[in-house]
Length: 374
Image 1: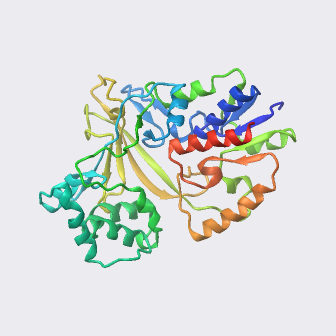
Image 2: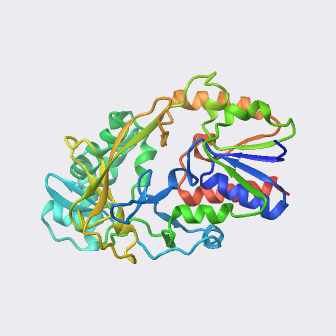
Image 3: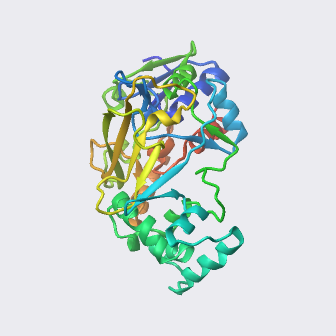
């Protein structure tokens, strides 16, 4: 192989770096992926029965405050004006999620005004007298009170992490927004939407460069020994796998999806419906046609996917780093191993054992290129 640059993984990080190498350095780059498609977990495809574009690994909504990221991606495809809204079902009733004024008023059967919410929630939180929250449960109760926590957070968290919320880090809950108004957009970033022609087309455009070659169904470890000694490797796979799990496996949560073609034109009226009850086995249902309101689905049917959270094992797709104390210690050992390698860079959520929103993954890749491609 006579490539100076090899990118392992054709996901959002790998595609961004490949495009920058090809365009900024004008040098040949080979992108490989063990899967049969590009785009990583952002991959999408068209369902043949309905014509609906389906996200292959759960719903991916792009949102960012970073104009640089937005401008970069818009070079490869226009975005629609979709704004993400989530609803959650609890004990047969449906509420806005994240918790907002509608959720509070409906749940408690009251009619607060925005300026009254803070004192009301503070009163609920004060009942527990938690001044120094040490875990997710205590942090959530200190923010929204026990009743809202028990209804909308506890069951969902137990299913998502398969772990007592008392054993989870308090920082996890801080990603969940909380509103004192009726604002129900899940994200408030300035730039939001989905690629007008789909994620797969966006990634194809990113890799459409005379200096970029892409090979799918290609296992890095099967070709590793064939690489020239001076080849620069940009590895976006699992860092522990690269080193043969010599310091043990890092812990991940994985997901399983049950896809269905529903014989109705609209199944739930929303792209994502959460299920907070612990006795419902899945965490949420995705309905993909709602991601592209500009498209007309004339099939009379719709595509849904039930999402199940599960423990990760080798062979499963890793989604969310669990990041226990043991994981952090193992990661430190792997990072020391990585520092000894001259021409290998570990990037992206798998290579760095770090959860990235899509825009943060792009931004991190762009900044890496700024610092390393000069």
